[in-house]
Length: 589
Image (tube, rainbow, N blue to C red; front, top):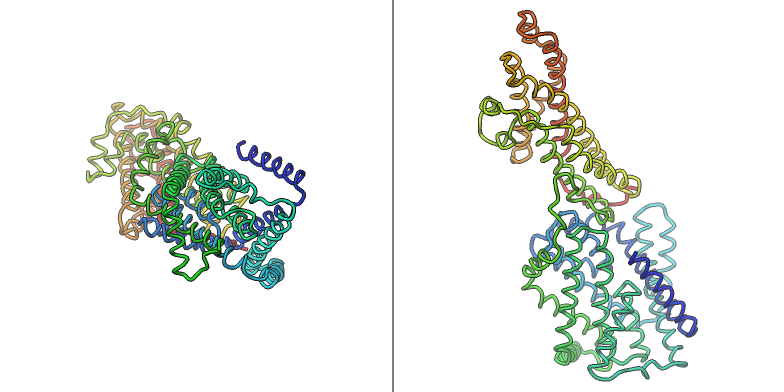
């Protein structure tokens, strides 16, 4: 609703401005062309950098300095802080990285955006546009018409750069024409008050354009055309930096509380940086003048001075907040709490934000499925057999675990399925099928997604078989027939052994050893399903159990073997190959 409202407000304001000032059309067209170029740039880089980008960003979040550097370098290279922000928010929302790691990426991305100012000031406003933009557009469109994804991606990048510089050209031309009718410098406000006013203007413009880079390009072209004063341009630049948080906040609306915390960290960073910049504005301007002189840049080259100010401003902000990142994290954790502690039946890692990136979404679905398996399924299976989960994870011998578990837990497996499994199972399947139908993914990702769906369906089959076994476990354990108790204890011992090996397979480093054990247990279960049970036949022949008891044992023997096979199959699907999926996050076509 907020995004739609902002969109309609923007249309209304734009229509009013163009109606009252037709001479502004060229500037508006320039802004539109530049924004279109930035969109094409982002789409082009997604083809090449999406998988490696996610891999790099995820692997650099263990140290703050690494995440800062990665965020800055990647943003400077691909000219899209929004793409880096999307990745960071998706990672944090999906629980793949912590809040501090996400903050490092976001803060680094802000430093990386300073490259845009230098690109515009040093190239876009200094060279003949036809010598740069037109060839890029020609080759970009030619490459875009090709079928190969790499060529199409290259075409989008070249065309995006061409439209970017073409937009700058039209904005500059528009301001040159515009000043023949209206001189905007007449509205310049001198002194500190003028900077405050223009900060507000910068926030509004950025909120409408939804891009601080586009706002900065607009400021630089207006400054180059002499339509705004340098001091007022500083205010607009600070406002543009603050206004870009509105985009992040709107983007976090569909994310979970973790994503909102990251947007909050972004807001704190921008506000603190803006307030400090205002407090030391004049010493900051002196520092910019000093650096400009040292670089041999003319003091009246206001576009390059503004680019330098933008760089110093953002680096200063990172230096200020860097020592306080842990405190900011604690504050946001306190301020933005989960509405309630999520129960086992609620998704922990699934939200709409993760759907932006297939690699993140597949990883989140895998984590959600593992969580369901390790908690709900293990709890239901063990408690249905009157066994404590901690005993499975202990060093007790299997026979001791069963011997110590004689009390009936009184669990209702069907009720546990509806309260702890069905909802989250449905959400996993919904997200997985939506991802398959809406996103282009690499073959490895599609295969993993199919395995996730299969694993979840097998877990439901485990529950169904457990429901049938639970009825007889409750009826015959402790009912006074030692032979029936002995048979069901044998079933329980077999299950405890399987669950214990699965736990070791999941947690221990020597996966191959425990996988071999699981394969042997599965072969035993498959073989056992087709073999007659001699002990049951003997019990019938000796009239130690009746026909109903024998039928229950035979059915539950099959149920047990099905449970074991599915438990092992799910464990293989979830834990056998735990490599990152990000390197495959590319267009498969």
